[in-house]
Image (cartoon, helix red, strand yellow):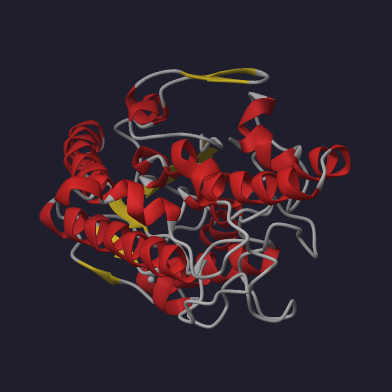
Length: 310
C-alpha cells in the first residue's frame, strides 16, 4: 500500500487516460484506509510531562510514521518514518529520558503484537518496545484494519454521480466497513489491556485520524475521481472509525486525541497553505493522501493540549 503511494507518480507517467483514473484512486483509497479529532480523555494517573525523565513509546501506522515529510529515520527503512512526525515533535517538547518510535507504514492492529514484513526489513511487534519504565504511549492505528485498499479499483469512475464502492460494500443489507470497524475496535481494546499490563503506570493516548475528505460530497472532482455518494460513504465510514477509536480509549481508561475536529476545514481539498493532508499529487513533500509536515505539527499540538503541556 505504502509502496503504491510512493510509486504513484512513476505509474501515472506509464499509463493512459482510463488507467490514470484507476492509479489515482488506488492511491486515494489505498491510503484512505489509514484514515481514516482537540482531544478528550479518560486517563489513569501517570507521568504526562517529563524533562529528562520517563520513557515515551510511539506505536502506529503511516499516519504516525509520516512518510516523506522529513528525513528518514529508524529501522527498518521500509517503515518510512520521518524525523518530523508527531511523535518526534512531541518528544522534543516532552524531553523524556528515552524516546522510541516503532510506528510503521501499513501497520494494522495485528502488527502491534506480531512482526510486520516491509519492502526493506522486518518491524518487530510494536508492543515489544513497551516495558515497565514506559510513562507515555501513543497509539495511532486502525485504518488499515478496515481495508479500503482491497476495494480501491471499483471506486474509479468517470461519472461524478456513480457510487460503485458503496453499492458493493453495502450489498445485501450488510455494510462491510462497519463490520471491519467493529472487529478493529475489539482487537484494539485487547491490545490496550496488554499495554496496560506491560506498563501499569503509563499514560496511554489513542490518536485519531485527521479529516481527509471534505464535507462537500462533490469532493474536489476531478482531482479525486470518486463519485459523490462514495465520497459521502467513505467520509461517514471514517467518522465511524474515529468514533470507535474514541469509545475504545474510554472503555480501557486511555486518552483520545481528537484529530478530526482539529483538522476540520484542512482536508485534502482545501488550499495548499491550509491543508493537513495532501491529495493524490502532493504539493509539498509527503506521501499521497497522508499528512504533510503542517498536519504532523497540528497533530503534535493536539496531543500536547491533551497532556496539558506548557
